[in-house]
Structures are given as C-alpha cells and as structure tokens.
Image (cartoon, rainbow over all chains, first blue to last red; front, side, top):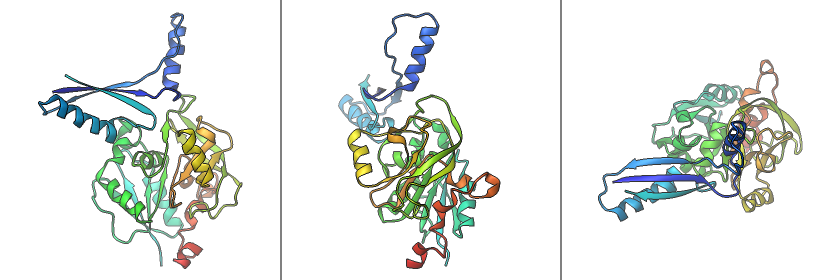
Length: 79
Length: 227
C-alpha cells in the first residue's frame, strides 16, 4: 500500500517561507494573493495490505518522526 | 581529577572539534562518540551535541539525528541526571529528541544569520551559566538559518516562571519568541542554545565570553570540587 502524508504548519505559527512566496507571487504580478502557507508531502511505500493497519502504522510514524507536533499538523491518506 | 565529556558526532556535524577544543581547554577529558554507538563511554560527566548540519538538515533540522542510536543513550544519560549541552544544530537535536521544549523554526527574516551578537545572561542557576553574573551582557557568534525559537504561550510562561531561560538575545536576530536564545531542562542540567560559546574561548576568536559556559567543568571548579 502507499501512504501519502501531508505535513502543514499549525494555524497561527508564522510561516516565513510562505511569506516569501507570497511576496514573489506579488512581484510576478499575481494580484489578490492572501496568505500563503508552505507544507510538505511525504509518500511512503508500505508492506502492509490492510488499510486500517497501514493507517495506524503511518500515524505512529507521524507522531515519532514525520511531523513535529509542536508546530505541525499532519493528514494521512492510504491508497 | 578531570571530568569526562563525550562529544557526539553525526554525519554533517562541523563544530565537534571546536567544542572538543573548548572543553579540553577547560580541563575536561574529551572522547568523541559516533552516532551509531548504542551506548556512551562509561563514566561520562557531560555530553555535548555539536553544531553543524546533521544529516543535511533533511526533514527538519536535527530530526534524523535525534532518532539515531546514540541519542537513546543520551536521553537515558540526561534522564539519569547527566549534564548535556547542545549548541546550534545540537540545540535542534535536543529539542527533536524531546529533552527540551519548543521548536526551532526558520529565521523570521528568512536569512541565514551569521555574526557576533549580544546576549543577556538570564539565569546563573545552572552549571553552564554559574560563571556569569545575572543580567550580564556577553557577545557570542551565531550562525544559523533555523534558530527562531517557538513554543506556545503556556510553555513560554512556564519556562520563565521556572527560571529556565538561560540566554536572551539583546537584539533579536531571528524572531525567537521572547528573545529566547537558550533554555534549560527542568532539572537545569540540559542546556540548548543557538549561539556558539565554543567559538569564543580564545582571544584569537575575537572574544572569550564563551569560556565560562565550560568553566564549571574544570577540575578546580566548585562543581567538581563539590562532586
């Protein structure tokens, strides 16, 4: 199975990278751009064949390594 | 008798020699410890996690290093009351390992900051800061891209209430919450800080304000004499 993990900064945590991207979009002439937030996507190949078991495993991966839960949220998709 | 320190080395560490030299000049016997070791050398009094770019800063700064085999031993050492100092990337590793609270994010100005910066010594209640005067302003080098200290308000209040802010920036270079440059663990024996005391221990460095971070571990110090 494949897991797709989306890691994003929690609301309220300043995202300087997103700010820089917003400025650059403005410089390119894109108007009306509000807040920009930059996150990351992590794809994991899994040996598991059971979706529930895979999700539980990836949830543990997020808690232990993939996300820093002090500043980041994560969402797991199993396919 | 000399105290013994272990300096942990990860792929990408680049201040391991600097901190080993600084500790050596303070009269500490230093052993380097490779990250794949599962145990620390016996009889260590202090563990130092050096600056650098461990594992290329992949995923998040310090995240991979914090899960390396040696760090399990370092966490056990700290939980057993051992002294641990983490500088710059070492601070990031200690936070990722859960030994210190908060997070270190990309600098608010997005730029890599590099230079000598004034710091206020916020507490002298730790072996690492006992050699300073409370409120003393010292100058230490900084060199980092991700040193923007973040923690929720309750955690910041708790750190301040427990007198666990070790150093504050006099001129905040990176957007750190409440100007925090270094924090102590609850037992005051684990220090993480972004500035580099080991790069300010010799007049040729342009200053010696960092020396006293290590001086408590000198054989003649009160800490060692009282031990």
